[in-house]
Length: 270
Image (tube, rainbow, N blue to C red; front, side, top):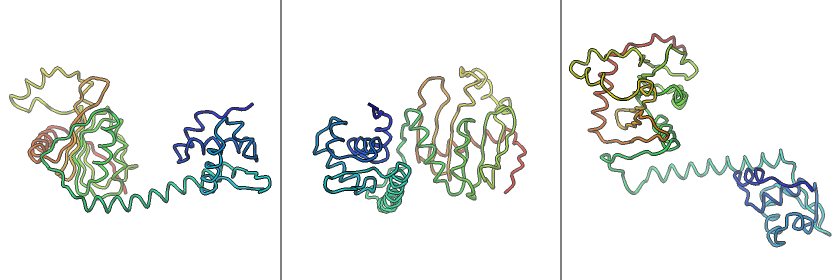
């Protein structure tokens, strides 16, 4: 007999069904319509769990009772059922977002700006970068690897002053990001010979040259910074902070970098 895959059950659970609801709905899709006995015998699960799942599925609009004596149930067609689940998630998202914003605005404790938070792992780095870039209001200064360039889409059509350093062999179009005030500096043409006595130490830095293009530094609104060094390794790690002393140092670094790095002449049209 046809088996219901674990992948299907996990997908339905991700969309908001319990494990038993996912199994019962899938069984009804398989049988088209069935009595409770047929369902729990096929699934080999307790009868009360099937009845409870059927009630939950009917409340969600995914199952209908088509006969009362004997009780026969049928699944709403999958395309319609999944549409219902998506609508439930969307409505829940809107409601939750409204409430969470209210909680955020009336936070009981304020984070100390002196704290320097650590970021560990690729997911944490990427989520933090998305959050930081998305909340920029006035300006951004960034050193960004090519694979993270798409993150600029989070500020599409915002009227931000953006300065970007990136390492790439040639210029590329930034029109698709909808950025109105963007300056791009060519990291490969940075002139470190003009850094005075500091130049000899930069030349002796043990970091492989290919790692420079993986360097991440993001400063938004001169208020919050994120730094991920480009050390070779399997795991990304970095820091995030609103510490004003750290931000002042980062602004000095950006100032020196911009001064010694040529700009790309971009053709950015609205």
